[in-house]
Length: 319
Length: 253
Image 1: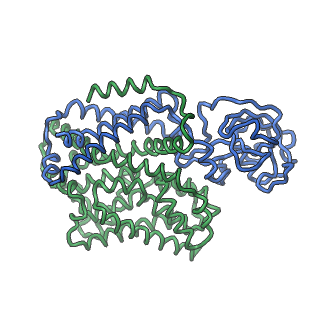
Image 2: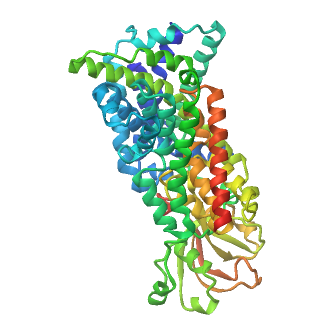
Image 3: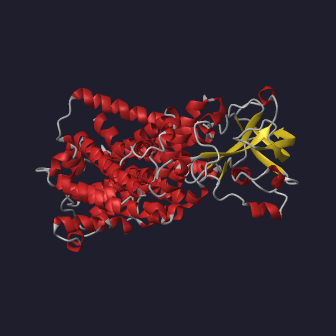
């Protein structure tokens, strides 16, 4: 492995630094977009994995359970604002959620965190305010919408008779081994490295696949049709949610992106874009598949889509 | 055996490849082709941390060791053909990642993508120069984005009297025979959110002399579009132009 690493460095040093123009336009754009989203996401994925390791290995298990309310609904409400303390982008929230589940969080609790944290964090709120201010209630609808959707979905999944069956068998099996570890510093350090290795083994292939799909769709799907639907109260909501799913933008900057489409779209559709995109998109689904069954993700996607659309349509009616 | 080995180390291999590729881009000044400069510090810092942790895992965790995860996951029965497929998939993924991250030269977005995105959108030109800014100068220091923002305001041609643009951009074909756009991509966060901004340039028969995506430096003044186009009522009339190499930082912010 070390030899391969040295070889990789040698290839990078010796590879040509020019000549990309020779590639066909579509291939060049696909590679550039895929690398762009990969390089942009990787720091958040590393940060999420490191926070996940901190939660699993270095934070006392009792601490989390002591500070969170015991009543399920209040507990989920508190979890949905944890993003204020752990402002990791949505890609980083997946490994962090895996760590929380391994540390004893229930699946509904983890899902509540996953859906709420990308939006209910200071960076996202500030950037949304920078872009929209208080115009058309977009900021308020985004914050309240995220809070309601995350808690609603968390509550619905809490009705599941066997929440652990929503996890992939391999992740569920790995979680079974997570309790009780040695307390020496060197033991914890080695365990941290072992967790880093297992989390990157789960996350990185999914991240590559998700980024490639996002790049491919960006090159292959024309935006003209989506933008053409912008002035219809219902179709504009559907169109922008489809766009959010496709472009897989980071929640910290999606407000800047959608502003470019602002004049063509109604405020409710922008709210739907800002709610749905950070919760579910192509890249996120690839990452989430490392942890949840396909059936769970299908239900989750449907619920979040319906709820985001409902909030958007409501804003369109009021605005 | 091979299944366990690839399953265990694929993530570390992909992490190291991506970190190596990212740090190389940063060292050679090409990271701005992919992400906004304001994210350099975070991207590089997390890349170094992730790379060092990956290296530590590589050096300190013995390959033969079976940790609790391995025991738990290995206990799940998986058909033999799926194990073979997963090994092939992981090896292919690492090989493709190595080619894309290490062997391919850095590239920018092309005008083919610009043609599918809204030109001179409100957001892309929001922070450009304003009309009072232009009133105080001759405009020679303004960027493509500044001029695009001013033209977007629908100011009359008289307003640009005596002002000179000295700008560099790539040729973007918007379908007009005698007008093309001298364009740049505006980046908010990363290339994924790139939006084209551009200045309409009046150049009859430009397709015979120029190619789309070609980089040009153009100097000239503005006047009413002789074609009376609604999309571009005011156009740049080049007095000088020359082909140039793509700038080190091809995007505007």
